[in-house]
Image (cartoon, rainbow, N blue to C red; front, side, top):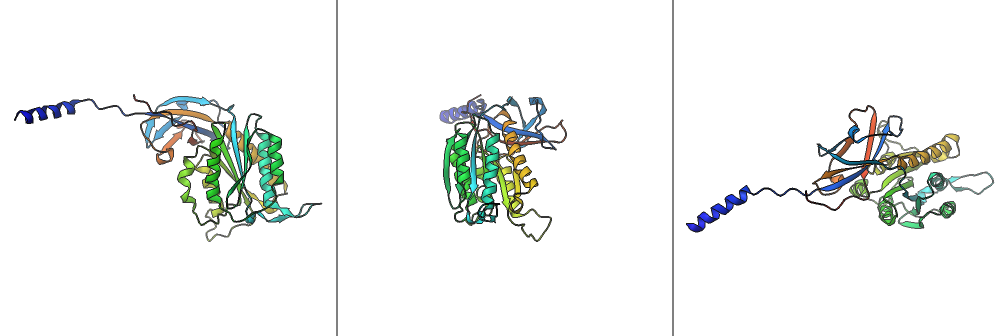
Length: 318
């Protein structure tokens, strides 16, 4: 009876013991905040924003604008057989127009970046080939882009994007972005859904430029073409943007203006960002939680988010 009484007493003591506080860690996320016209919203304050995780409001613990942070930029250019569409250029042989467009976009972006930024140049067909490792040498990058004029084999877009994101881990800077220039037709048999969870955890903002040689025929004219959906999803899942260029109209003034405009948008997007931090006791990837940031008192504001490359901070008890 004494043993039973002692056991009951111990249980009562344990039940009255205070619960251990949950461990928390700092969750960092990067924000692009724009109005309906795409203009970056400057001079935001923490009180302008509401952070929600799985529906619960979160307290912002730090908030900074970091437009001067140097950038590591990866450039991934599709050189598969489908990029061979020829274009007659005055005084020259027929050249692969899609490749010409791709290198034109890449060169436009490089010219607009800052001296401290670095670049990684890659191509892909069935696998990724590194043409120039991370470098700040603009001439080396541009010379390599001018040399890209030979097409290869099948298009393994999804695996190549993941491979390129893996190579981005060697970047010097925490601010990283990848530009994917492609006709977006994967021939590997894989599906977009096979890689979406990994995109959200990549810590790299992905921009896509689609080179369209023909218009897709779709049963429902109001439906979004698969070509466009793939590109938009690759970008949207990482907080990036997407653009479509019609290759047959490559030499037209609107196409050239579009390429230059897209390059300008990319460089602005990479510079005009905020980083905020909030404490959370939830683990797992950011993609596994429903995290939303909005500006409830500012009309017509769009906020896009991605995880910061320095996250997660080492957990600590509170």
